[in-house]
Length: 339
Image (cartoon, rainbow, N blue to C red):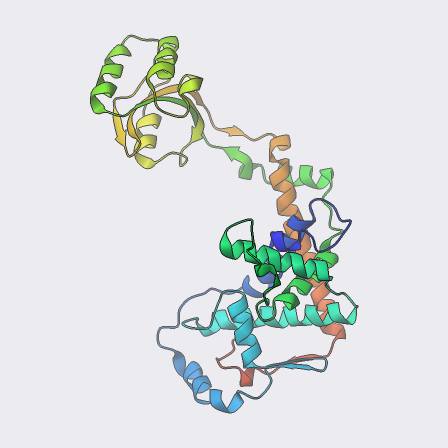
């Protein structure tokens, strides 16, 4: 969602799109965070009963916010818009998505009440962006003028309003330092290795190269890598980089991490060709310095602050606006979070 918000509110900080994306993620977390999405294999009596009365409740509201009434059709359209659908989803998952639907409807009503609107430029940019995403090309082929999906501009308005709620969220250096001191274990870096390779296209050539490396030192390895390897790192003397466990394919990793520092491997075949690896240096586990961890810490604190700010704001809206849900009219058996 961060791409959608980038041009919504003018004269805002460069990090606004990331803030808005995190705020919308926080909104989803408020509704979905407390529930597991497990499948209801048998359907259950409650689900069966809900199915029997579905036809009777189709015209009855499932949500009322101020004077606006919404029905099952509106919720189904919402599910389609967020890519969820309702086929095969258990009642618990549908319930949490309905909670999110309620929250976003309350936010939409608040945005309209405060006179927040989308400009024509914002709408055009959104449609152009949707066209580019649909075609995977920079040229939208004239689709920018096509009709948006149902409710798309409503969701865009919610995103704009949500950004306005959290846009003043800040994280200062003292907060970053305190977090680092309290969570140092999160920033322990595993043992790493610097690896080089010589990659050739035939096994015969690989064996020939390996024989030349029997008594060769690092300088000779670099020279042969530069002259014989077809790998992209050949110009660097075969230096691939620094890796920790999990970074390399399993078969390569097993070979590399079993080497002693300064030693070369036997020939390893892969879909790329035939490799000879050299373990240049081992780095022991270490604690990431605060300066290096600061960016990640800031993102974590910012996300939590925005989630909290949005939760407080939403709670305030629900205390002041007139709203009510009608779970008995839903097409599934609604499950409350506190049940």
